[in-house]
Length: 319
Length: 294
Image (cartoon, rainbow over all chains, first blue to last red; front, side, top):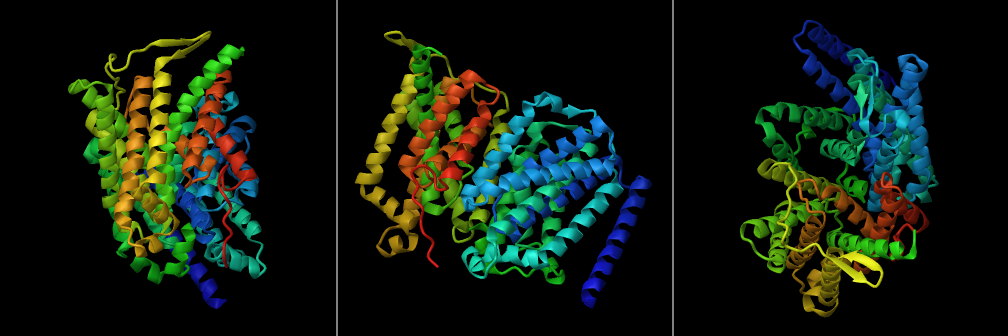
C-alpha cells in the first residue's frame, strides 16, 4: 500500500515538473505555436492510444473502430457547447458520456464476436458513423463542422492526459483490470473461474469509448473544425499501430510509441512527398525488427511498474 | 421500380458483385492459409489496374493480353510482398502481421501517388467499346456483361484448380493444418506463395476491369472496394471460397439497389448488412462454428 502511494506521489510530482518546463518553454516561445500544437496533438493521441490499449492489449479484443468514438465525442461536445453554451469541461464530459453510451450499445451485440470478426465489425461500425454524420445536416454534413470555439489549451490537454493515465493505470491494476487480463489470456479459463467475460469486455469497451470521446472533444476544441472523413477507419488503424508498436500492455511503451509516431511525420516533413513513403517503410522495418526481439521500449519497460508482458500473453492478445 | 428496371439493376448488381467476389477470393484464400487480413490486397488490385493501364496505353496491347499481363504482374507483386514482408513474421501473432500488412498497403498507395501523381487517369477509349446490349426490353451495358463473364470464368477456373489439382489439394491441406501438411511432404512455403499469387492475380484482373468500367484509376482506388470485398468475404464466412463468392454477389446486388434508392447512404449499407448478419450468425453465412477444445 505504501509503495502505491509513493508511486502516485512521484508520478504526480514528475508530471507537474514536466508540465512546468513545457509551459515555460511555450510561454517564452522556445516551443513555437506550431510545435505546441503538435505537442497538444501528441497528448490527445496518448489519451486515445491508452484507451485503445485497454481494449486491445489488456482485454485482448481487436478493435478497428476506435476513431468512431472519437468522432462521436468530438461532434457531441462541440454541438452541445455551440448550442447550449455549456462550460467547456461539462461539454467535454457530455461528449464522452455520449461516446460511452454508444460504446456500450455497440459492444453489447458485437463483443460476442471473436478476433477478426470483431475487428471487421468495429471497422464497419466506424464507417457507418462516418456516413451517418455526413448525412446529418445539423452537424455540418460532409462539409464538416466549423466555428468551434478554441477552448483547448495546453494545460487542459496535459492534465487530461495525466488524469487518463492515472485512471486507466488504476483500472488495470484493480480487480476489473485483472479480470480483463484473464479474458485476454484465456477466455474459457476465465469463464470457468467465474468471471463474467462479456461484462468485462463491455466494461473495457465502454471505458475506452469514454476516453476516446473525451479526447475527441479536446481535438474538436483544438482544431476548431472537424470533418467526418478525418475520423474514418484509417484513423483507428493509427491507434492500433501506436498500441502494437508500444508493446504488450505497458503504459510507458504505449506513450513512447505514440509520441514518436505522432512526431515522425512532422520530423520527416523535409522529405516532402517521400515522407508518406518513408513512414510505412519504417513501419514495416520496425515490425520485422520487433519480432526479432529488438525493441526500442524494452529498456524503458523494465524500469516502469507496468504489467509484465509475457510472450504467451502476446499470442492471446491477437487471437 | 418497374420489372425491367429491376432486372437491369440486377445485372449491374451481379456484375459489381462478381468483381467484389474476385477481390474477396484473395482475402479469403490468404486468410484461410495464414490467418491474415491482408490489407495490402486492395492495393494489389490498384497495381493491377495500373499495370493494365501502362500496357494498354504505351504498348498498345489489346484487352486480353493486357489483362493477362496485369494478372501476371499482380501475382508477382503478391508473391514478393509475401516473401519480403510477411514471411519473417509468419510465426508471430496476427496483430503483428496485420500492422505489417497495413504498412505495405500505405507504402503501395503513397508510393504510387509519389511516382505517378494523384490525378485520376483513364484507359484508352478503344480497349473495350462501350456498347449497349438488348435482351428484349432489358438494356444492359456490354461492359457489365464482359466483366461478369470474365469473373465467372476466373471463378470456375479457380474452383477447378483448388478442387482438382495437386497444388489445389496442397493449398486445402495447408489451410487446414500447416504443420501436418508439412509432415505429409507438402512444401508449405511454395503453397503459401502460390496462394498469394492466385489471389493477387484475381485482384489485379478485378482492378483492371473496374478501372475500365469506371474509366478512372488513381492510387487510392483500392481502399473502398478492398474494405467492401473483405466485408463480402466475412459475410460469406471467411476462409471459404464459395463464401467469398456468395458474399460478393449479395453485397454487389444490395449496394446497387441501395444506390438506386438513396446514393448517399449506399456506402454504409455493406457494413450494416455485415453487422446484422454477424450478430445473427457469427461465423458468416456459410461458415460452420468450430467448437473450441479446452
